[in-house]
Image (cartoon, rainbow, N blue to C red; front, side, top):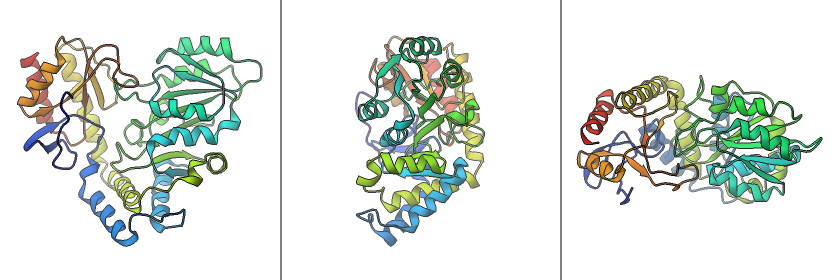
Length: 364
């Protein structure tokens, strides 16, 4: 946005900004768990009990409780939890560094993975954004006999909401023995897949050789990075990823908040069904207005093709509807033209979505 918003309440579909109650369509709080009373109370209770953190790597029960919740959610032997979602691709890739020889990365990959790559000491080649054909070509050009490639991509790209064509990527990788697919799925976990395990579950690719790194700070409404996997992957991470030895863990209150958010989602399945309903409502409505919007289950919806998006954003704000304009090239995967980025939440009512759509119809 041109002017930073001044938030005066927890994130939500309806919230206080600049002294006004507004409909909010920005950010990444897809289930509005950042402001959920149970999540907030869990954070407060754990902070009162444990303080701000262990100061070292000493054990606290709150971290073990979160591990149990995470294992249950992802259906894996282990889920490595760390201080930040931004570091989770680094933790995953450093853990796997002895299992691949060369890197092929999507040209629009997130900054977190770009920052991780120099720590690996491997040859790097890019392929065109979300282009499985170009991936196949780059693999054939650069992967030598007996080399094991690692293909790196986002699962859901954060500016555009584009889903990576993971099945097509896997098909392009089929001829390369030991090839790994590693995704930053920070915008997929919690949202995509039959049970919310993310983009690999959505694509039917939860199998050996496919890995994800994610975050608790978006759909899950808390903080911290996650890498689900088996015991062997957790052991490799413990051995190779120095951040797991050298960095302090997330504060106990945030670990407790993460566990509480998982509990809320597991006991309130209507949140996921409401989000699915709202995504369909928004995407269908925008197509009715004449915009080219793909039919995907991603809660990030991008509109482009309008001549003055800033004016539209300002006029929507006058109606107490807050949306975001992403400037051309302004983020890792942002298109080369300005776009309107609309974030859909489970807590948006159908009437709110209709009001946004009607306002857009009247204003553009």
